[in-house]
Image (cartoon, rainbow, N blue to C red; front, side, top):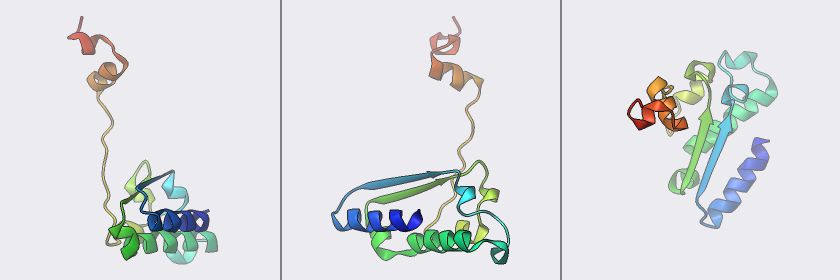
Length: 111
């Protein structure tokens, strides 16, 4: 899968396109744990993701790659510590924020 994405990203970057790639459940692609215990497919995916994070063409392009995991500890630590990678914690919304989003009483001053 990542080989196909790699080819696509390179073609779009060469075309000067703006790209955002979102990979949900990233822990299934780059799981935490000892690299020697990873399958060949997982090791290949990890190498590809690290290569993307350090590739000058990718770094200079208008390219954003977001790996989404429920917890950063579920991702391979070698990837998380790679230069070009930033871990961003996004807190869950509190009750007031959720009510405001759905247009509940909090959105109307508690009425």
